[in-house]
Image (cartoon, rainbow, N blue to C red; front, top):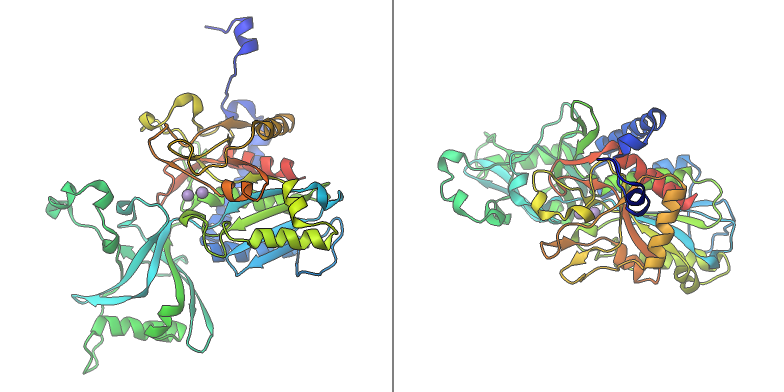
Length: 461
Ligand code: MN
Ligand code: MN
């Protein structure tokens, strides 16, 4: 039944973006997502994205910033935090004391990290011990082809970069699972223990070395190969950071190709639009700052995560350089915490409350608060700031929706929003809805991804 005049006037209506966008804009979204899929195929870990972002930034005229460097309006700078987090900024024409516009996404994703001493041989198979990183359903990570990314520092200090399993001709690695025929006992375990942490062992070899006098023939053979390929010995693995991630490339999903499946949409589907947005910002009034940070998936602790002071120090440094101070700048600043939210899943409707869920293709999600139970662990954006962001997105024709993570008391989660807000910065979560978040193959819609870019761009331009 058609809505009456009064109902139309008074009620809020949500609409699918594919009904609201014209063909030309849908085409723009398609092109943007082509770039996103190429990025997702080429950079999978925080270190690789850090390099990708800095390369793109340099090409766009960004220069590395050191405290004391003179700055003026229009200058483009970046700060590289240990190769794992990066801050990009375009200096605005307004005095910096009036505050800056920040966007903050994270570039780490759930994965399997190798333990310090990972390599062992058991029953003539060589394996790597792992320690999972971030919140995962452990059973999802078995029988998935894995690639290995990271760095090894040799005893002499030399750095070796590892990236194996991504190229066509590369081998991959895998965690095995029990055949159903013998899984009677395993299937009785609770699903959080269906695969236990110590069972996430990655198979890396099975040939025996023929030479005489070798005890561990398979393990020694793997060490021989690692020595030939990387010049390392077993002890060097103690000073390494090696991450196993799904080896496959992103793919379009659906007969209509409306969605993208990939490893690590959380949070690269916000990080990439955020990066593209700041590269497109030309002469902003307010200084535009884009943060690509590490360690969100483990709670943001550590000196490359946003619970540390690296962002605060950076803002203090540019504030002083431009004749103000960090405290004033931060207190007048505003932030979009650019992280994903859970999209309504028609297969599991019971965990969502429909009126307050985000849906695929309904645009970028604006989330006032996250957290657990009675809003524990959230910054809960002030209504004044919520209204300001809603007006901005409406005025700039960005398609957006509201959305919470899921039903009250069913679980919950957080983002970097609270670390930004704790610096006395107005902060709200704005990001892309994701299906199957934290799985080895996550799902997003192309139109939402493009709307994230548009939101970050209009916020900072
Ligand atoms: Mn996230
Ligand atoms: Mn996450």
